[in-house]
Length: 330
Image (cartoon, rainbow, N blue to C red; front, side):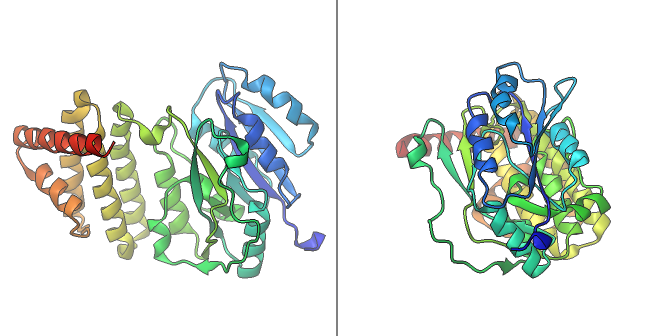
């Protein structure tokens, strides 16, 4: 690849209380085979030794550290990174994760040869504490064809860190992450997909996702209630773009979320979650959103339609049955 065909890539890394992980994360980014990168580290007022852990990496002139004045959360940190990015392309890496050193090169090559505005790729989880030699990197020999994806993009995982994006798309659509809410990747994923016209997928698990006990994705507490607000934001986005053909995909994802929330959320928040699910169900029906008739969708939809006290009783029965099944498997 000639220097003329080596666009700058901005890699945004939010940092908050990741002193134990930031070395491995930044090492995997600094060692990318594609060298024309800027690494934007947004330090969000960590209370551990994260800032000190960054110091040895600052000899790499491609690293730029932005210090927040107060802890503002993941969305705000990513938004700060977006504002600071000057690359022709941008991407996100969470500071407790690791990326294959060939990731950026593969994305740049795909974007330049296909004119893709968004390039997606796969991920593989690994458990915290695993030895470095056991990390699930892709095979040494990469032989693959990038695949153009249409509306199937919306069925992909929402994670922001699975996307290599042409920066002009982010700017023109004013893409950002909602501040003050969890599960912020949902609206970003949908807004990006609605804004980008050319999307390609690389069939390689380039991203290594660290499974931590404190992960939001495994939460069962009040944070799950934010999903109802997030779903509403995404519905508003889809309505504003008037893309009826993706409504079914969104309806399925929302129904799947309802199942996850109502079967997992801590008991003290179950009544509040049911009330929100009833409200969301009404919105979906009024706006003509239809979902697939899977067993889970049917079960959760029928329960949500019941009177609240009956629905709560049925949910308790369902939760107990699922818990028993999980214990038998364990």
